[in-house]
Image (cartoon, rainbow, N blue to C red; front, side, top):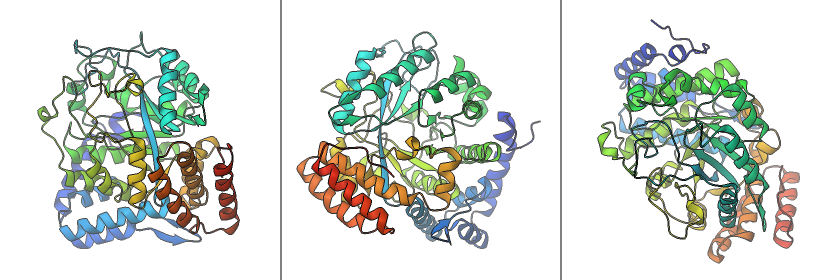
Length: 482
């Protein structure tokens, strides 16, 4: 029987079923233990250190107690603490991105995904390099600077050489004032050699969702194809880091298995990365199972209520305070609005989840990976964020200045990241307002920027930011960054 060991490189030892079940039992036994809950919340609270703040975070067992707690006033305290942590380390910035689907050819049999091999009525498509270029131009014309590329697993149609060629094409396209400055990659688990090639291609974050940490369920949900190999999939992040990728993104597909099991497994994976590599996940995503071609989410009996979904997000933020947290357009405007105050720091905007979808005038549905709930334009999302006191950020400076992995985490943990990120967000928002925004969005945006500039603590930084913003407005100069 496998023994729990966060420093092990074996999936069954760092994601240990026995430890997860013991944790769930412990959480259930202590869910109304108010002195313990209060001590956990106190431990997780930001502490003032020098000019910044520091957080201890929580163990998976401590976090599970919070998630199990059903005392209304304690849940409110969790929501408040999650927002406080997010504001202390990420401020009111929300990073913007869009997914770009390259190919929906796939050899796997994942029962929750319409790309599965047996689905014979989905339109299969793989973008040519010319089509990639046209998709990128369409995204640049909206104002996007950061993409997450997606592709099904198919060694014949989507080999690593194809992915690398697409990345090269994406970075090469400069249309008007548009440029994609960061390409994150969400493709199937692969080899150390291939991860090294992705690193050399200049990717930002490598993202891979575990889908479910419950091994028995995982094997049933992935009955055929290379993704069936639970250990190879679960150990992918270690190979990615061995290949030199120091920013990795975790996630589970909530609704496939019981949420508490997934929550504990996710945090154990984060602890494992910290224990082995000295740096936890750069991002954690929280997708839920949604309707899609050939997929009915109601067949999965582990669906999550909106209230529990919000609680999970808050508890992840409390437990892993320095990670970026991502919510996609799978969720409605209402849900996205609520969770922005519970720890989310990145959202997608104007997403199309079909291959070639951005160049289509009408949103295509015949090849979508999932139904998009929030179908607003990027301009509408940007305006909505600002009206609710958030700064939409198109910044990619940390990745391009080498502030990745442990270097990013050390800046974040000391609170110093705000001296870079806040002014960078305002400068990239100015670019968006000048080049892409509607008049109404411009008006709201410049008022927000004026107020936010006053909050930059260092006078010299504020002065440089003000001068750069004036330069962006009055010339064609772009891409200023701290």
